Amino acid sequence: MAQTIQLKHSYSTGSWPTGLADGEVAINLADHKMWIGSGSASSSALNLESFSASHLDIRGHHTTSGDISSSGNIYANRLFIGLENITTAFSPLAGNEELVTVGNIENGTWTAGALTPTVVVASAYLDADTAHLTTDQTFTGKKTFSAAVTASDHISSSANVYSANNEALLAASFKYTSLQDGYYGMPGNAGINTAVWAYEKTDGATGLGATSQHIGIRVPYKCVLVGMMGNIRSDTASATVNMSCWTCELTNNTDNTWTKSFETTDITTAASTNKVMGYSDLTGTAILAAGTSVIPAILNDQGGTSTLFGSYTIVIRRII
Image (cartoon, one colour):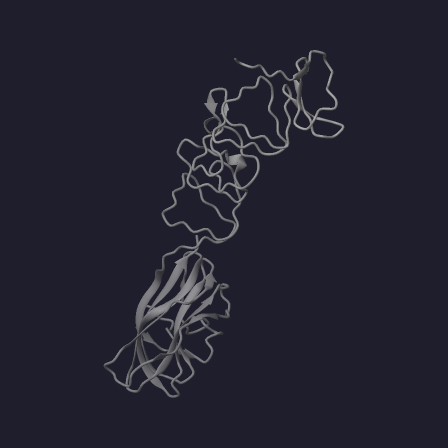
């Protein structure tokens, strides 16, 4: 026949057993507590209403009507809140690929990849180094755009804005007969468009435009004097020459001082009247103000008198 095992028990609130043998069990049905004898003067209480334990391994299905709290970790293969799996309610847990939770990210560093089109990060919360399209900002450092920039209003700068394109300020040809060694040959007062140059100076720095020297041409806008390119030929012997540009912001009716603002590296021609030496030197960095006058020149550095034929293009780059 069936047997009933009845533990020591009490219906009195606050009552607990004493002197339980090792493993002996007693229950207080009013307090919902269970005691297990530990072989000592005191016994261990297991509160069935407010449950606590150093380690609890629950297997199977268990239901509680009160809170479950832990000062350590709670591990579960699946954890539900109500009828919803917690991995769905609070997606994502660590390791998930997508962030779909609605709310603020207040700490840490954003390291995610590309955002989906429906996700927007408020401009005010972006890093201070981020360019904002709808607010005024000051940028420092070099900025390079790989495509055209279109503006619906003015673009202004407190410094220079440089064109990326080289332009020809002037192109012409010349002949200088018997240019002395160490002298700069320049166009005379007949003008740059006259092919025969007949004026020479040892330094080219003073007296230009005084009595017989052509006064040059004026640049129409602020620019960088990038350099010169063209062809050179010597009449008989090989020659070493340098092409140069002399500049001056002229004072009216004054014997002005000119500055050599650009000079090519050495150009050495062959010892033949039928051979031309091409040259191109675009390494200049001098900035010319609008209205600056420019005179081309050729330096004979051969060691003897030379008759020279040549062409030149003065190359500039606009500064807007």
